[in-house]
Image (cartoon, rainbow over the protein chains, first blue to last red):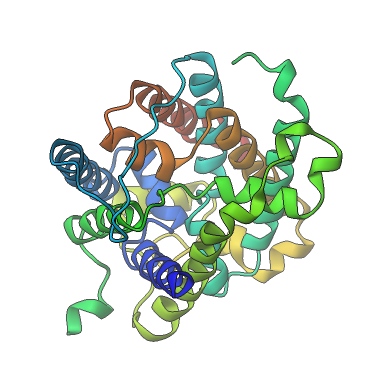
Length: 137
Length: 185
């Protein structure tokens, strides 16, 4: 049952990524050129709605649908890993035009070459695992 | 219901993304897609090479199901919910991209120059996809998250580390588009 719920959430996510055009390489390029409000509007509305909802969940100790307490885990207070990792991610995001959610949506939409991006993203993840202890965090 | 066949406006799209994050929170999970890449590495046996991949991947199966859904959702949206898939980007952006050699700008969902099946035999395009994907995978894990985990979930929880990561995403993206693209295309 829970598996079906995750699947349905994923399907809605995939449809949203495609229909919002957040999965389009062109929209990412346009965003970094500051030539349209579209992507900023999407991220802005998502974050504003997210901030309000997260605040309300914390404020009223909202429990999950299964009655469990909801926990938010603060991320470790560091700078280098977020900045350096973020820059590398941004370089790749702008070049491939897809981040780790939309790249799967594009598989479903039938763009075979995105499989190359996914395979190399797996390789990049693997290389991080190998280098983790040598990289500044 | 005709609106569903059109590209969704930013306010509907943004709200839907927040809704997806809250649905995951309300079923006791969280919204973060790049962690799946780590899980997939572990399933492929990466734990033999690095400790980073030695974790109970079965606890992350739910997120792989979300990925499966994202693939199915892409299929549904593309096959049944889209009449015209060309992305109507700013005409200035189209002119710009055409000058760089992207003839398909304004006429397609993804540039043919990078995502047509002919790229499998085009060394340059194939290399760019490989480098782009590699940086996305490496950077997301190094930063501990991607657009979903940091830009949406992290910023919604007012996490400073996520703000630093998002600033990094933009520094990297701006360098790529404004300084590296002119060298590549």
